[in-house]
Amino acid sequence: MTISIKNFEAVAHISVAVMVDGQHSDKAFEAFFRKNHFLSETDKAFIVEWVNYIIRNWRLLSEIYNRAELGKHTDFMKIAGIAWIITGNTLPVWPVFKRIKSETIQSLHDELTKNRAIEHSVPDWIDKLGAAELGERWPHILKALNREPAQVLRVNTLKITKEQLKSQLDQKDVTTELCTNAPDGLVIKKKLNVFHLPEFKEGLFEMQDASSQMTGQFANPQPGMRVIDACAGNGGKTLHLAALMQNKGRIIALDLYPSKLETLKKRVRRAGISIIEPRPIESTKVIKRLYDSADLVLLDVPCSGLGVLKRNPEIKWRLQPSDFENLLKTQEDLLNRYSRMTKSGGRLVYCTCSIMPSENMLQVRKFLERQPEKFELTEELSISPEDGFDGFYMASLKRIG
Image 1 (tube, rainbow, N blue to C red):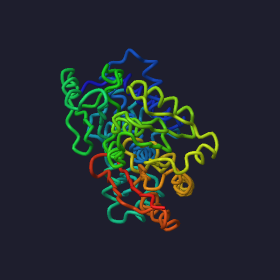
Image 2 (image 1 turned 135 degrees about the horizontal axis):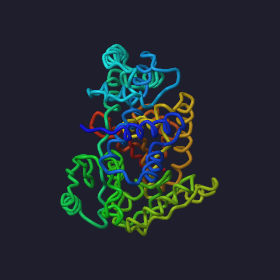
Image 3 (image 1 turned 60 degrees about the vertical axis):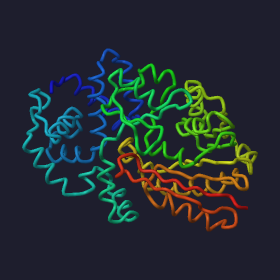
Image 4 (image 1 turned 90 degrees about the vertical axis):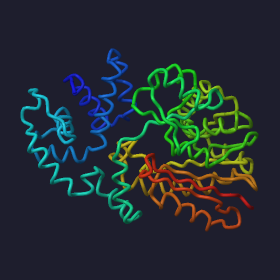
């Protein structure tokens, strides 16, 4: 493999932006590539892959760096060099790598990876939480969470069929395969930036992991329904609900952050959807006015995100134990208040992108115990990251009173 010092420098630069400056990786990539628009798609793919590797394996890499005594202050070029060595590559003979001895790095790697939390690069508190909540399944799940994620498209069935889009992309050497987990999904075989494709700009697809797509299928909205997406965010699931409803009915997309709903509006226009009404939650009155009104309420609550670490690895470096405890309280509060938007006979679908029972089935059980005469659990589904995609949980609750 021919490698460039410029690409290594880019990897180091973006890694600093994320790990030191606290930028979200998507924003850091976007800013860097906008400034360096002359880079080839091959160079961009290299940079994205290795920045993500560093973020995902940060604890292991930094432990090796410190044990090897490569400097008081972290040099991210050297961190990139360590990553290059432990993945089986030969380190380039560049001055910046002069002090790095491959044999020493490999020896430290072999020693440090005897510790599970270091091997899979998670803080000790997350390792302990996972072991406490998931028991003997945790080591296998933890290993799966540290793998590179699949790149999955959700076909916009309002504009094109899955087979038609697959054929169009195949003609452009964008090789995909049908996603067995998600009926509207295509898995890209060789990763690339798909956002420059005309098919994306025409609204023929969105990027959405298979597990996230399964949430829409699980919710099973029908054409003509009145649906409330209570924590819509940027609207990935909202758009899928609209497509499943064949753009017939009404979806009210709620969120606390107007900026996210502005992003949703752009995506709605691109997708050619007319039934979504973004509505910011400016006060508690917005929710109260919607009590007893929805055939279906989708409650995709704020959560730890511990099911999507392979896709968003920086979460594990920013989430704190106090954050986790606060999220549990928020989930409980939202279940209590937002469930009231479900009309009698309607359904509430609670979901998270977490794998922790305390955020998932235990949260639902507590909710049902508080009001056994109002809701009943009809179905629930847990998706493990071991299955190849993100970790998700979803529960369908029917309002009976």
